[in-house]
Image (cartoon, rainbow, N blue to C red; front, side, top):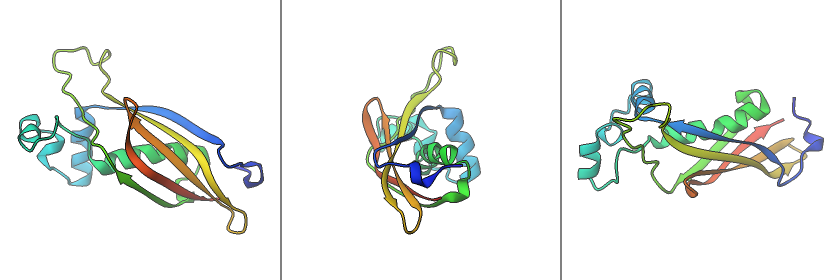
Length: 146
């Protein structure tokens, strides 16, 4: 359990690197019902001027907040979560490569305490979400009730 009184603004709450591959996108499409071909069909994605197949925005957003859920230990403690999508997460086809050597596109996520509200006993967690050093989500913030 997190002790609110020990938290400080700027404190790191966790960091991780997630790997997303085309199979993950197909599974997410099935779960979400979002079968837009930009998420699985390379030819279609490039025809609409995308660099390649891209991850679903909500997949990226959901994967990123796992850092917060893991830190707080109770996903229901996340009472607000919002972000802006700035760059697509491009997921290349690893055809012809060993999956162990190409686990997918690496998404790095780091969470820090951005603000504390002592009266409400909430912490705003600011997430930095990037691929190859480029932010793919900005103003990514989760509010946690402690």
